Image 1 (cartoon, rainbow, N blue to C red):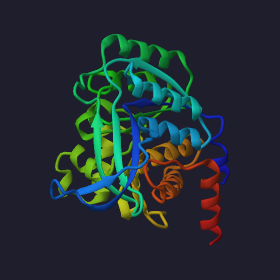
Image 2: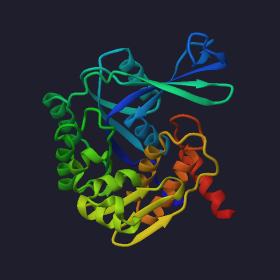
Image 3: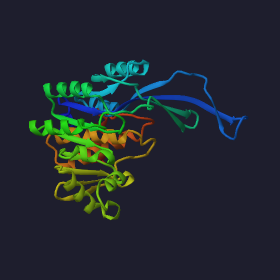
Image 4: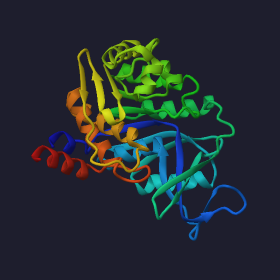
Length: 320
């Protein structure tokens, strides 16, 4: 696949909220004698750590072969130090403003049955907007750097609660830099003018007035208009993805089996962006991104698809 092979060498900025994803595995052998709840016996308290939220988007850009810089807010704490080390290990350049606490999402699993029990979150007690000094620091670095694309990875924590998003969008438009926004509905208006708006179906319906009553084709066209974007791409879960660039297309899902859907949207955004900036049209780009996210949902936890895996999967499907 020529488009995918050209991912290498592209330079992408990922801007967004980050979290440290942690995984703890144990076994359930009996009920908790103290209450009507399961009892997880943990023999090894070692946590498995991964980059979460915008960090996972950056991981996917890197694993797909492009150079990536991650712009975010991080705490001066032990969780932040682990996050920094993970970025170094995965060839991700980190441009982080230091404020508050680093968010951590700790997931607990029954290993024997690969069963996800529950999640505990840390560092969300004070999710105030990013400070003016931090905003200026990140914006200056972005403006002094050269990127082929900017991906906004919005988890509605801190970085986009002020006016930072619109400042970056305005800058990118003035330099003709491709932008993609994976935005939360409450922040959608801040990303008006991006090249691509990429919500899931539920988010898209919340972003458009009267969207809950619209057929998907009408919804996609209206969202593109409201967001003043070149393209609208709506992921539809098991029903695939819908694209709109003046014409409507719907593409089926590419997953062979589903293990865990967490992080699949980050993979889709990374592959879609890299395909579009390498000359693929919106339908071909969405098709490639569907293959990439299909690979990821077959893996447990927040995961990535590599450039080699993606090329191999596309070749297998085309030959089959």
